[in-house]
Amino acid sequence: MPSRHELRQLIRQRRNQLSIEQQQQAAQQLADRFSHLPFLPDCQHIALYLSNDGELDTWPLIHALWQLGKQLYLPLLHPFTPGHLIFQHFQANTPMRVNRFGIPEPDWSCPDLRPVPQLDLICTPLVAFDTDGNRLGMGGGFYDRTLAHYPARSSDGQPKLIGLAHSCQQVDALPIEPWDVPLPAICTPDATFLQE
Ligand SMILES: Nc1nc2c(c(=O)[nH]1)N(C=O)[C@@H](CNc1ccc(C(=O)N[C@@H](CCC(=O)O)C(=O)O)cc1)CN2
Ligand SMILES: Nc1ncnc2c1ncn2[C@@H]1O[C@H](COP(=O)(O)OP(=O)(O)OP(=O)(O)O)[C@@H](O)[C@H]1O
Image (cartoon, rainbow, N blue to C red; front, side, top):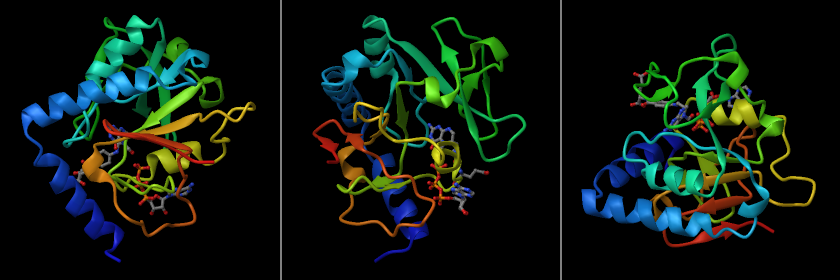
């Protein structure tokens, strides 16, 4: 099995080779599929992220969810607890800044923060996934640290975490580490993978 480092390089390269047309089509298809998830009507407060490095463009999904009246949140690199994320309310007019990875994030505003337990659904970026719900990220451990102490499902068993990815980010199996937080759901433009 390739190492985590090798897999990251391979899959990041693969998704960066998608054409603009393939990227646009994938983003629209994902927005449509996601909008019809059976548990979406029960989710009002949803964390997303702004795409980077060939990740599936989340903008069509963001607009679709705003249309549905959902409250959206974006991750900020935690200002006091290195390696962790916090989530802040995101609207069309939210003031933004660029973080040290070059990814735009909302300007820190305490009253607009929402603690993880009060989010109904958190969409995570990922580099590679397998159909068992295992996730390999960019290597910062941000999502693994932030989500380590929270249940991945709500009390009625619905997923509270869902990974988003291009179909080409699927691999047969991933080398797993003890701290990796598995995903009860993964959505791609072509399929939704739900764990039992
Ligand atoms: N869109 C998006 N936002 C996200 C994440 C993500 O994976 N995707 N993250 C998920 O955790 C966090 C940021 N994690 C990241 C970790 C590494 C790199 C990155 O590009 N690393 C460069 C080297 C950067 C450097 O010079 O320090 C690289 O690997 O080439 C980007 C984001 C929070 N926000
Ligand atoms: N819950 C945790 N507590 C402490 N350290 C952690 C935790 N989760 C991950 N780490 C550390 O973070 C580093 C990166 O982890 P990993 O390679 O799994 O990141 P990733 O899942 O690819 O990144 P991300 O979650 O940011 O997308 C590892 O060195 C790991 O030890």
